[in-house]
Image (cartoon, rainbow, N blue to C red; front, side, top):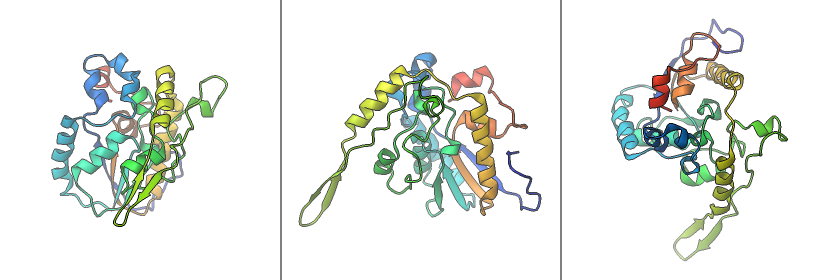
Amino acid sequence: KGTGQAMDKQPPKTIYLVRHGESGFNKAALENRDEALHSSLLHDCDITELGVQQASEVGELLKKLEVDLVVVSPLRRAIQTYYNTTAFTTVPVVVSHLCSERVEGTCDTGSHPDVLASEFSALQFSHLSPNWWYSPASIDPFSFRPLPHTPPPQPTTTTTTTTTTTMFDFAPYWTAVREHTQKRGYIEPKGAFVARVNAFKDWLRARPESRIAVFGHADFFWQFTAKSGEFARRPKQQQQQQQ
C-alpha cells in the first residue's frame, strides 16, 4: 500500500516487474562487492553480454503479454534491458526516477538527462532534474560534497549538402561525475527510500492504464512487494548475488 488515500472503487491493476539483466556491477561484485560498490568505472554501468542475452530471452515471454504502459528506471541497465527485450515497441514508455534503485554504490548514481537523451533518443528525459537520483547534498549541502551540476557543453553541428551531424563532448561532465563518485560516502536513507517506493505506488494508482510493465531493480522491487510500508531488506545471500 502507498501513502495516499485508498481507492477502493478503482479497478485492479496488473503490474509486471522486470529486473534488469546482468550489469557490469553484478559481474564485478562476484569477485569483490565492496570494491565494485565504490568503483567510479561502474558509475551508471551498462549491462554485460550476458545481460543482453538475458533481456532477449525474457523478451520472448514479455511479447506474449498485453501491456498498456511501460515504465523504465533512468539507470542505464534498466533502459538497456528494456531495449534488448524488443518487446512493447508500440506501447507508450515513461521514464521515472521514482523506480530507480536505492543508492548504495556508484552504479546507483545516475547520468545527466542530456547524456541519456543523446544515447536513448527514442525516450523522453527532459522532465528529469539534472541530478534526479538521491543526493544528500539536496538536504544538507554543508555536510556532503555536492553532486556535479555541470551539464554537457552545447552540441557542435556540422551541415553538408546531404546530412546534418551533431556531436557532443561529454568529457568535462564525466570527469566531474567520476571525481564525485570516487569521494562518495553516502547511502540513500531507509526512510527516504521507502517514501520514494510509496510515492511510485501512488503514481501507478493514479495512472489510467490497467496493465503496466516496470523495468527496474532488485532492491526496489523487494521493497515494492513488501507487505507493509516498513523497510524491507533482502536476505544477505541475495544481496551478494544481485543489485
